[in-house]
Amino acid sequence: MDFDVVRTDLGWIGFGLSERGLRITTMPMATREAVEEELRVRGAATPVADPGEWPERLCSCARGDDWSPNGDIDLSQGTEFQRRVWRALLDIPRGETRTYKQVAEQIGRPGAARAVGQAVGANPMPIVVPCHRVVAQNGLGGFGGGLPLKKRLLRLEASS
Image (cartoon, rainbow, N blue to C red; front, side):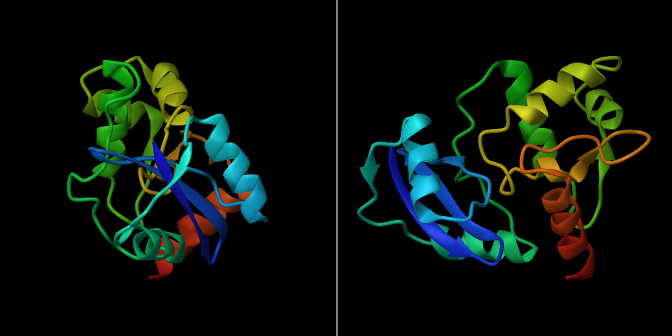
């Protein structure tokens, strides 16, 4: 998997590309070196020769702008259940949230809110596949990048 790193308004974000499209992203980090290490741990080995539009698209995501991946992301990893959850996350409009329970119902698995939470936590493309838009019924729930980042992303999307 080829990779690149881009500086965004939120910090450094790394991404990995497969022949199918965007395969992984990192949470924003303070240093390029930390992002590169995370990418290596996740299987990205070679700097990408041509990152295409991905650096600008990731910067756009980090600003809270509205855009759609248009099918050029690689959701082939994970279980079928996880992929169903991740596709459902792509359907949540910018500036809106859904509960884990609502996502479970959307994918036809009412009662699987905890499993949805685990799938959301395993999201290989944070920010691009907007896991930050999923909240608990009585609060924000968790977020791999920390609750301050989740709040910031939700505010950015609500204001743009």
